[in-house]
Structure formats: structure tokens, C-alpha cells
Length: 134
Image: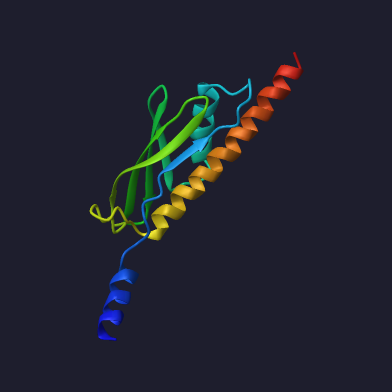
């Protein structure tokens, strides 16, 4: 019984696995690497906690700042997909051996992923309207 309680306590202390994404982008002729990059940059304006900067064509860097918590991600992208990959963090209880982290980090990455998807669809619609108007 004592061993079971100890195991439960130890399990409860570890966070979830780091949430790294690999998101396919809607396959449409209007989607380009540039459109996906624009959508990624646009997504960050909805969150004061995220600062997205361009590293080079096809790669952005995301910096999450939430109080004393900091997370850095790489966001490689092309016309077919984008990924959000953990690089480093401070005060998010990262465990390198178990690849676990505080659940709030994963929640922030999921919010960014969802917003990027929304922005991709918005920019596709905008480009379609511009194409129709020509």
C-alpha cells in the first residue's frame, strides 16, 4: 500500500510529454510557403505572450514569455506543413530525461497551433477573394 502511494505521488509530480506539433496544411493551389509564413507571423499578434521572429525562409523562432516562465520553439514551415518544436525553457519544469514539461507550456503551444491554422485559412480566403476580383 505504501509503495502504491509513493508511485502515485511520483507520477503526479511529473508533467505531460512535451507537445511538439507536425501539422499538415490544407492542400490547395493558393497555399505557398510565403502564405504559411505570413499566417505564422499573423498568429502571434493575438497573443502578447508569444513573440515570433523570422530566422530564415522556412523557419521562425517563437519566444513564449508568461510571467517568470519562458519557452523557446522553432517553427519550420513550407507550403505543406508547419511544426512547433521545443528548444528550451525556463521555469516550465522541463525534465530532459523524461521529456516532460509543465502542462501550461503545452497549452500555450496548442493555442499557437490553433491560431496559426485559423490564420492559414483566413489568408487562403483572402487570397481567393483577391484572385476572384482580378
